[in-house]
Every structure is written in C-alpha cells, then in structure tokens.
Image (cartoon, rainbow, N blue to C red; front, side, top):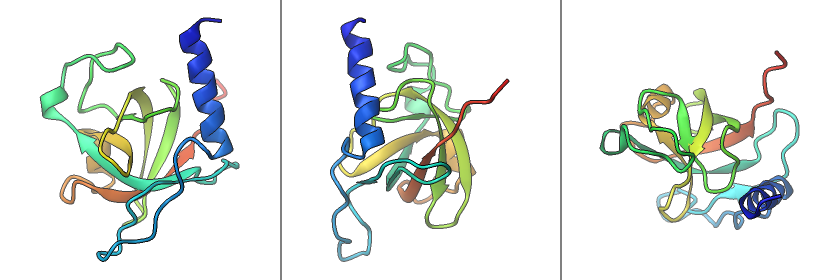
Length: 145
C-alpha cells in the first residue's frame, strides 16, 4: 500500500471515529458556533456539523487536489479529510435545504469551516448571499447499481 493511500485510510478512520476535527466551541456573541462538531456516523445521521462556505469563479477551470478541473456549476465540494469521490449530503441548519455533493478537493482553509461548496451547491442550499452558513454533513451510501 502506498503512503498516500495509507494516509487517506487513516484520515477516513479518524473522521468515522469522530476525532478528525476538534469538537465545537461555545457560540460567540452573534450565536454562531465557530468550531466544527464531529461524531461517529450512523445510518442517515449527520457525522459533522459546522460552518460551510463556497468558492467559484476565481477557481473555475483550475485543477483540484484530486486532479480534476474545478467546475463551479457541478455539485462538488472540498473537505479536509474525506476521500475523493465520497458523496456527502449537506443540510443547511438555517433553512433545512439539502444538496448532495461529491468531494473532489481539499479545504476549506479558513478556521472553523468544515466544507467548501461549489457555487452550484451553495446556490442549492441558499448559501450564496450569506457566504457562510451552519450545516450538517451526512455520508451518502453509494448507489447499488
């Protein structure tokens, strides 16, 4: 097994055990929790809660960490540890809207954020205006066919 594959497996194990990201912090004066919350995933249960942000035009067409070209109109996202190709349901904790994205990049790099959504994914959950929103992430089982 190559070193990179071993690192990915360890990262996935850490996320699944709920220790990949430090637990959330208390809400600040504005009532926004600054840190992510991670838990062991169960069927159809969120495994991580925290802040989502989005990225778009300046990165459109550039290579992602997975090697594919970033398409701001595709339902994709950047996550710090999940393996590329993982499908994740992102649910807004503000308005309840949901979108399923495929992880194809690394990030976000801003403190306290757990996922960066493509422009299309951010639009689907109403994230474009505020730019940052509280979300819950749930792993999506692969299609059986």
